[in-house]
Image 1 (cartoon, rainbow, N blue to C red):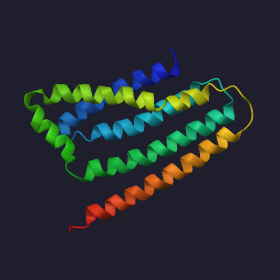
Image 2 (image 1 turned 90 degrees about the horizontal axis):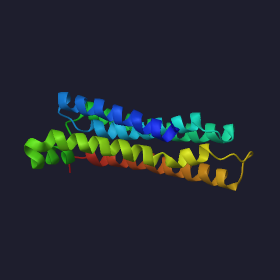
Image 3 (image 1 turned 180 degrees about the vertical axis):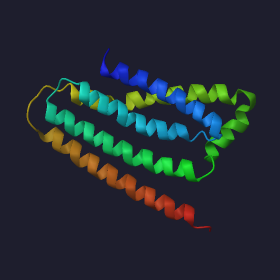
Length: 165
């Protein structure tokens, strides 16, 4: 079984468990925690099981793990401290009696998307070229800019949401 298939299988199981959790808590925001953590999980799995140059696999695995952990923890804090996100409350209302069945399908779709979002790590983990190159440097620079931008956006959103006006 490939690391991608294994990652997808793990994510299907994780999202099924999180779907059960949202039934108990009446908070479908768990899907967002699962997706963001799952992208990292599948990426780390791909990096660990790949056959490419080990230092590049380690770097790619660390980058996706850090990105994923930052986002998952940010979302987890919101899910634990706040009521269900309005998007999911609206979906429950619109879907009525079919809400749980549709939410299960939605959770499973997010499992697939988490695995697909981790595909770049899978590609990097298969790269047999030894040594660092311009692509590696570009990837690190893009990652740094993206994570810094996401962190800034999270702080801006928190300030906006805290302002009653």
